[in-house]
Image 1: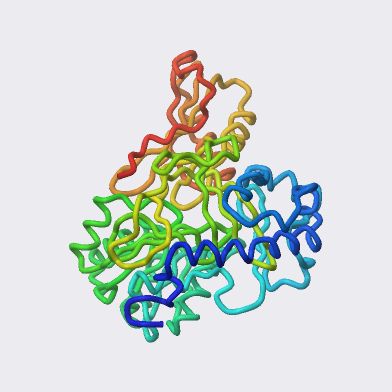
Image 2: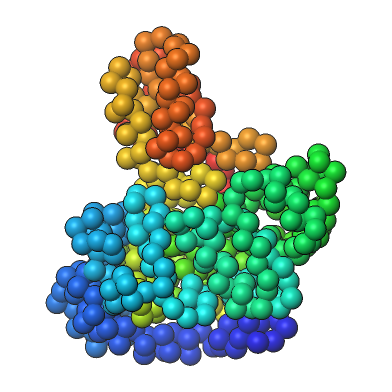
Length: 412
């Protein structure tokens, strides 16, 4: 570890990195097929010894996140995709879906220390972690990386803002970790309450897009803010560096950008689905389709790190979207509508207001029934775990285009 780079892997020659990773890949595929029944079935007929290049990797089938729910339901909890039984792993998580994820034993199992280091965090920093610690793995993913760096972690989680302001004022954390919007809530509430939150100097955010205007606001408040891109299935995928030119791929994964709905890599620069292969021997993921959209940026980062860069999160390959760091699925919108048979078409519109994500359920109904609006809002929150507004519109007024989630946010 140097002052500038987490390790020398970040600055190695790209050809050396490619050779090293694809020398490891056949053994990973062999292990997955031998120890994980899910992988044995998914990769049936594949010769592990042949997977020695990107071209060979591209011939393997994609395992899409959208398929995990059904695969796990048939063979709980992990669909047969772990190399050890559930009781031999360290933690069991459940994300909305439900989709189950494991955590194995070992320091920085999710590999997030690298991203935190690039965001300026060092031994002795106090990290205020506002990702959720309950059931989902978000907080644990960053918590493990921060502690591996030698940072102290405040296990804050989301919500209970008044209590959070107390601990911020007295403990004076130097770094924030969480979704982009919640830091603004903390800062604004602290100002209103006359409490000191000026100790924050750096932040690493994820789970939702960091909009340029919000990054600029944090900068004006003296906080350097960087993004990380991680999922509960593969850990960290990419992260920002002080160069702020795209997101740099982590050293522990191979990333491909493929045409949505296929496994075919697209030309560099073209937007496609992010497909990840991770060298995790507890929970190997081989061509895992995240459902996220991005594109490769040409060249290397000006910061000196030499790995491939992507443009960051550019939306979803399907209609699933993230609101305040939580996935909202078309099936959830359909579940809300199903409970009210008198409705016509429904559409969940996601937008931005006051530098926060907001969602509005537009539902075709014969009349503007205030009681129905309240019930729909209550059901929407119960199903998605997120608050949203409800707007009743005239029958036939919503487009007949099959879309049930419309993301109207713009990503710069």
